[in-house]
Length: 191
Image (cartoon, rainbow, N blue to C red):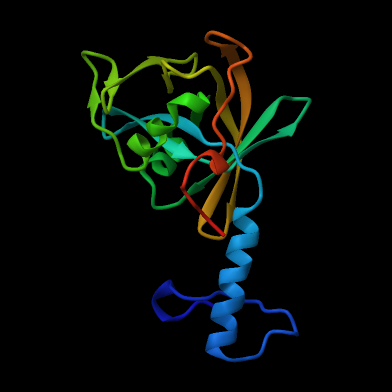
């Protein structure tokens, strides 16, 4: 169980872990390191929705993404519920998943908080974007993107797993561009 206030180690614990706060804390740190060792990509997710009569857009760094079906082509992404991106996908029912070139790793830090949108210049945090078929933003520098319409969502812990059907996808340059992975950065998320 989580410590009061939602912080601290979280169970369950295997039988070989003593029932003490120190043992729980030690095991939780070990479990996080093991989970951090799983290979993850790093992406920028685009979202768009009309809220209170205003179109809102966002780009956000994300690492939990996977293809979940071949027929139809479905992509799943895990988004933390308090995030602006969660609200926009929940309301707008669309998202884009943009890969990041390995050489552009600094980009992901620019999209860890809600962005500043300049609609006139079509930029977010100074980076150009275009609109996908769904209207969700696509990072212009992305080597590839996938544009999706939400077909299902599942509440999982403190995240929602949005499952989107691919309605458009393309490479924007060299198909062989090496894409960014979590292990290419000093970032740790999750665990």
